[in-house]
Amino acid sequence: PPLHRHTGSSSPYIMADGAGEEAPPNAFRTGSPVEPGAVGLVNLGNTCFINSVVQCLNHVPSLRSLLTSGKFEKNLNVENKFGSGGKLTISLAKLLKDIWSGNYTAIEPRNI
Picture 1 (cartoon, rainbow, N blue to C red):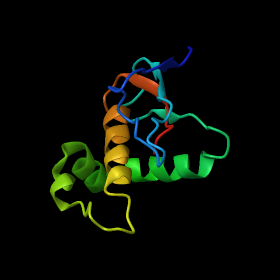
Picture 2: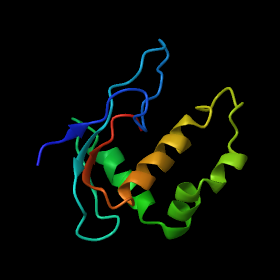
Picture 3: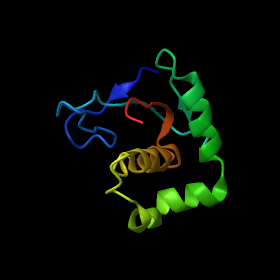
Picture 4: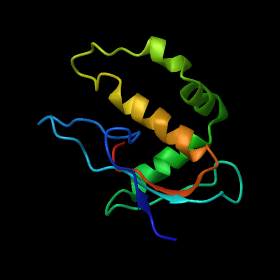
């Protein structure tokens, strides 16, 4: 099945880059995965290594539970000048929520 793009600012992974522009929205292949959490991540050129890392993190139950529950947000250090302001963790949490939503068979993770 074709990938469907989310458009507009309601797309869960759109983040402003350094120039203040929005990144292209993710695309999703809708449908029910064969098992909960069995969702593919589309390779976007050289993203196979990061996709592998995301899939590994996705299957660490305690980490997945923390990120999908939102309980991590109170512990984010958003003021560290050397960090991402929590954007990476928030983006990963949103991606994991989509992976476990039961609504997709594949996701094009453009903004993680």
